[in-house]
Each structure stands twice: as structure tokens, then as C-alpha cells.
Amino acid sequence: MHKFILGIFSFIKSFIYFLRMVSVFCIVMLVLYWIQNLIHAEWSWLGFIKPFLDGLLELANSIYSISFDVFGTVFELKYLSAVIILVILSLVLKLLSFGFNVLEGLYKGARAVCKKTEEVIFNKKLQNDMKNEQKKLTKYTVTIHTQIKVKYAHQEVQVNLDEQNQLMNKFISEKLNVKPMVYQGGYMYMFNNFERVDAVLDVLFKIINSQAPLNYAICVQIGDNASQLNKLIELKNFGKITMASDTAYRYGFNEDKRYQLVQAGIFQYEGGTLELHEFKEVL
Image (cartoon, rainbow, N blue to C red; front, side):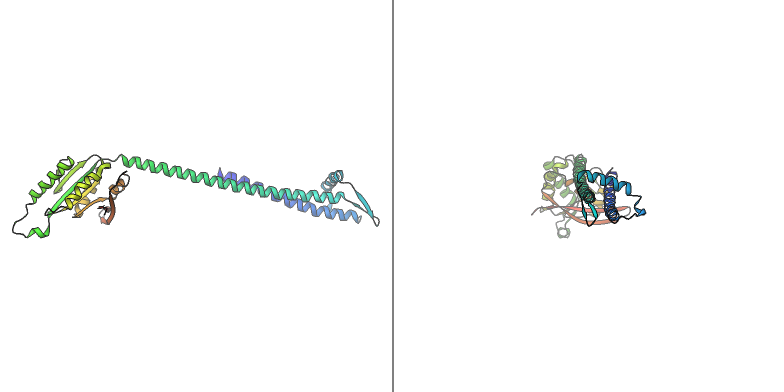
């Protein structure tokens, strides 16, 4: 439709330009016809346009019919009137051409505004749809893997890893009302409200920052993507709370966010790529 309308504008402007050229041509022919009549000549090549010029002169004569004699030559001002008519016609056509140029510019401007408005509305709808889709993702998993800190590994009083894990699980269960499950050599915790993940992160950072003789590798995974969770676990990022890009993206839609997200790296593995992100406390 847009191309069709532009085609109409182009046709009208071309047609007006053609009429202007015709009017200029008629002015030239009229002047030559006037000269022919003044010198009482007979130019046969003017015959093709003579009926039109005579009709135009008849119209001009009805408007202004004065004539006078100069040295035996009759000057009829109807010729001048006809020339003026053609000049006015040419000017009117020029104004029409300008007017259609303005109209075309207004049309293009209005269309650009409408298109921009449509894009804004579409993008906003797309963002709302994406937000709604992301908001539907509420379930998430946290895994914790532990190891004894190096400085405690060679002390005479050895740290009991199982005992420390039990203390950790007891602390988490009391704070978050969740039961641990053994998973991939560590522990898994299931949660149902990702909008309140910051409350869980508060507890997890307390664990990481505690004086316990353990290092903790903590992973957060939105949804039920077990294969991706296993890839996160394999990286064994001790001392960090990490996640993949989908979880980081979902966190961006939370209304209240107290933690920063930092990209921790991109890891290649057979069959794909894992973009790793990390939760950071705001200092």
C-alpha cells in the first residue's frame, strides 16, 4: 500500500511537470504564431497547433480585446493576454507541484511517526510478553558442594567434613525451612519462589562468609534444567555463588534485587557453551 501511494504521488508530480512543459511549449508556439500574423506570413508547420492557439486567442479576446495600429501593423493585445494566461497556468502548475511535494513529505513523516509508534508498541508488548513468560518461572534449585579449606587440611585436629556438612544443612533448614537432598556428591535444595531468591542468597552468603573450615561451591539454576546444573557443578567454583545465563536473565525481572550480577566467564564443552554468571554482594 505504501509503495502504491508513493507511486500515485510520483505519477501526479510527473504529470504536472509534463503539463508545465506543455504550457511553456504553448507559450513559445503562441509567440511564433503572433509573429507570423504580425508579418503576414504563413508557416505551415504551425498548422498542427493552430486550432488550439485560435481557441486560446478567442478566450483571451473575450477577456481583453484591445488592439491598436502602429505604422500600419495591427497589434492585438489578445496575444499578450493569451501569453499571460499560459504563464499563470504554468505558475499554478508549479504551485501544485510544490503542494504535492509538501503532501508527500507530510505523508512520509506521518507514516514514519506511525511506524515508530507501532514499533514502540510492539517492542513494549514483546517486553511484556517476555516478562510474563519469565515471571512464570518460579521454581529453582540450589546445590552446594563443600571441601575442607587448605589451612585446615594439615592440622593435627582434623576437620570432620560430614559433621560440618550436617551443621551447614541444619543452619539452612532452620533459616529457609527446606530439606536437603544428596546430589552429585553434594546437596540440593528445591525452592518455589524465585521472586524471593534474595532471602535465600542472604543465607548462602552468610555461609560463604562464615568462619567454618569449609569452602563452598554454590550453584543456582532456574527451572529444571538438570544437564545445565550438572555443568555448573562440574566447574567447582568454590567461594562463589554461580549460575548460567538463563538464571541471570530471569533474575533481571525480579522487582527487588539486592545483589549484583557479574559475568564470570564463558566455558566451551562438547555440544555447547556455558555462559557463567556470579552473584555479588553490593558493597
